[in-house]
Image (cartoon, rainbow, N blue to C red; front, side, top):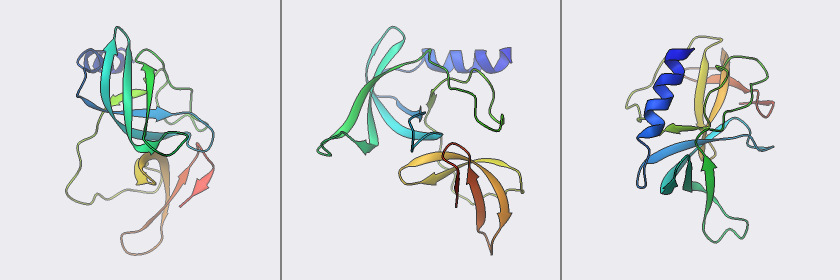
Length: 140
């Protein structure tokens, strides 16, 4: 709603070169993954970012690209994320302790260099969960 938009609007205004952010991918194969980035430059509503875990096509350097701060994510297949959410967010603060998640909980799980949006399906052992990632139809 309006409060969510206002929250993101205020945070986006504070993003500047040197800030760490996460950018949501909507590309096939990595859809629904938030990748950690460093802002290199800013021009109005665009930022140039350097991905910390993604390399360019030559795999010689980290990928850099311009990202529109006003671009919003497409709705997810299951409708669990709010509509109109931006594709750039401030980098999350790492939690030092494990959390408990109920079946059906919406989670971001660290996997292959990014935070993947998923849903907890079941517990599969002590402290292990099976998570479904709807962006790529993956079960882990």
